[in-house]
Image 1 (cartoon, rainbow, N blue to C red):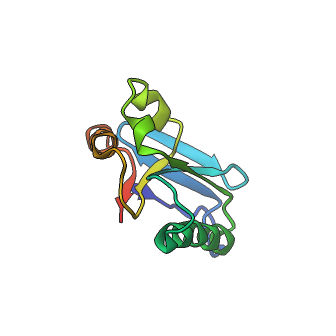
Image 2: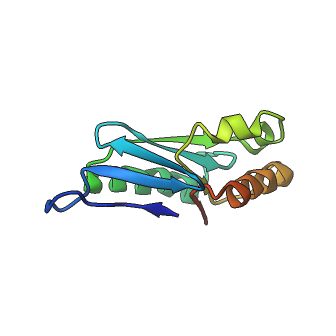
Image 3: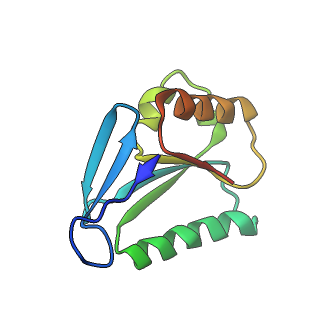
Length: 121
């Protein structure tokens, strides 16, 4: 589970500590938090547009740069899934229909088995 630790008396943390299984990743606040969003992005889906807006709001409110990338579900079926997901500090199963449910299941399994920060909507 992700943990946010404040290191001073300011409103927000001076760094973000993500606990990913046995790995701990410290980010300086000027480094972007990388979030992989599992889903087949479609601009005609309001929930997906709101996902991007929500991330923008969090980034502004917490003063944390966030780099969110939509990961098409077909791309999650490939063998390089582990290395692809490890490029992100957290994974979010985005809203909407999935073109490749097996890719989604593989990504969720990776997060569960590796204790990788994950949220599903």
